[in-house]
Image (cartoon, rainbow, N blue to C red; front, side):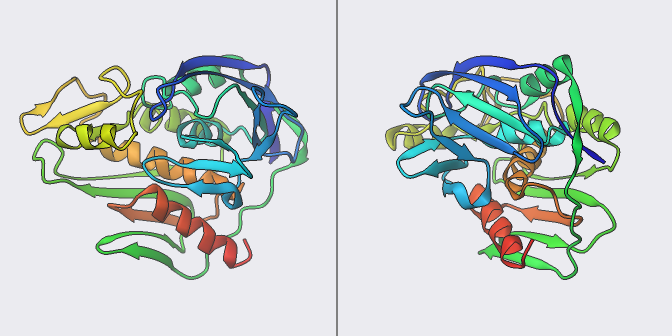
Length: 282
């Protein structure tokens, strides 16, 4: 299969979840083989930050990429949208240090990509390597693993004390056909919004996080239920965790053929798994 890039530029402006700062992102077509990379257009010399595992330098409640003192935070939803929609190469220009959260999902990015469309490039995609033996990363009862499988699949489980969320599982398969895979990603995974627990919000704000969070860009759950229903799916929280996992593992450049299975995991565990896969020579 050929590599693909965007047929036209995409521009979005919005507030960053953690910084609370408004930034503009312009996603441009990029040369075959260049992958996804960020360009900080607000800084001298326009520093480039590659969307690669080696560039990850922070994983607390989001994934941050950095090079020297330059960084871009909360990249996972945008990268998931690009990968889930079959965009292999993209130049992402941003005038600040955090990607806008928009509505808390990848729905807007996916709609933008679908609107401009893709163009095939003259270079073939890198062949996806198959995981031959199970690879595990865990912390306590939380884990993420890559298991040998005939297709690339993402399965996730979460478990919260709040009965409104409780125990949820979901599984989604990345098919070989770009059109079918993009359609299923756009319908099943991309619309799932980030979520938070009401009793944790004050603490997070005191530690300098979620300055840009609101009921317009995140689901919030308390002991009495959701503060801002309705949900887009009955199990929207766990679907969002798959969105995060897809975005984090997209930093590998191409998804291995494997069943990625996670339970109560985090960005940190996602990235540890990606690092372990790279260590095997992927």
